[in-house]
Length: 318
Ligand code: NCD
Image (cartoon, rainbow, N blue to C red; front, side):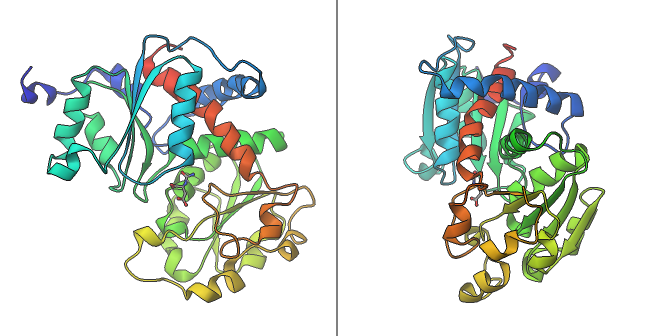
């Protein structure tokens, strides 16, 4: 098969099964993914965690950026559906021998996997590849652009605690500008009618973020952001995506770290979330990380259910 044969447009079904972002996903696709994820939730606590919907399917996990939870979560999800999986990281792959991204992806596609899960530092990399590859692509995080499965698992975690997303007050606090988690959550939550407050220092919160969706308010004041919140989402400072430190390291917690005292300003049943990895004493105190309404580990648990649903969709079996 000539390499150039990959460079023709793919059938729309392949494009439809890819999960590239939340922004361009139709509401009915989101609703399907959320309800299928919820369907897989109870199984995570069962003694035998195995279905066979992906038996005979092969999933390639390709991570060009570091990851612990997302990578493990995709791998566990695939195994719980009985798929065969392989995981490849950029270190030790042919990319370090000078091969281009397109050639690496074409090489893997030639082995006919049923889906490729990919994380890459370049925003838009999975979108570009999905236009040409004969394999559905699942975006596990592209640069500062989007992290669709994180927003889906965040949504089902909120729905475990609140009856609906519609009308909820959600505060997203931290390094918004460099966060793909913030962007995917803004798109998903606003499609379902949540009211969003984005909060961070001016160097981490561009005024353009206000145009991402309707019902968004920006503030630089954490007390303002958490007041009346139903959900508080904290974000890590994404040092790996910045050329210079956008805020003095030692003062960050003083101004933007979430402490127990802030929770008194939020609703009495407010939950705290964080995509991980957390930096205790930087974006939140240890007391907050470990307090009963902290959902950080519930988010991790729900990640497996979400990725099971996403992989079924990618493989076209559901
Ligand atoms: C996030 C990511 O990689 O974008 N982590 C994750 O996938 N759970 C957030 C982060 O790295 O801070």
